[in-house]
Image (cartoon, rainbow, N blue to C red; front, side, top):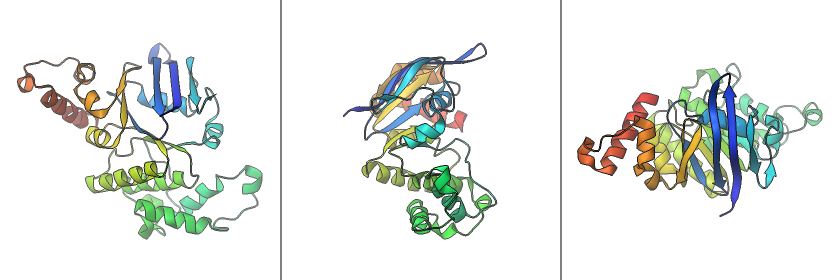
Length: 272
């Protein structure tokens, strides 16, 4: 596979605190790629740099062979990278369907958008189809503010899909979502990937990440510790050390797999 996204030596500080300290990794085209790490490891800051919401102090981000470092979020979006956010961004007083139609407006340049009315053409049907895809079509006429947190996550995903980006950046899609909706979300992400989407996921839910992703990058103290297959990441001593700050071999009889299970279970609880 070819590298679709390449992050090289990204550094970002806020005051005297280094959120990113020379972070480098790649995302292969067609992968579902996980980005994990303890709280404060720099995941969200890196996401923001990669999508134009923060400017790095050093380093570069390349997408499809072109450098996009420091470009505006709008320009990066138009190049084919769409993202969701850790905290859902929906218009609470508008209906679920109206939220989708607003998303449709954002696909067009401003001078074209001003001449269009919500629901024009096939946009309304496409919106309903995408709501059906994520499993909330029955809620189309409800106010978005009345949805559960998990349902808002699904709405935000459907909202993003209105633009049909080539790459999806999903910021904690399973965070605060009940197990039933997590299973539904997992199925939809896999379907999107099978349809050709490359997907980068920042997530604390280790079971979700390990079962979903093709490859995983682990961050710690602003750098990428490693990028590898889920099974390798799960048992790597550096990962266990990053999450627990040191692991005693006597724990769980010193069995690496048992230690990894205990580590990630503890991580899920502490970061939920």
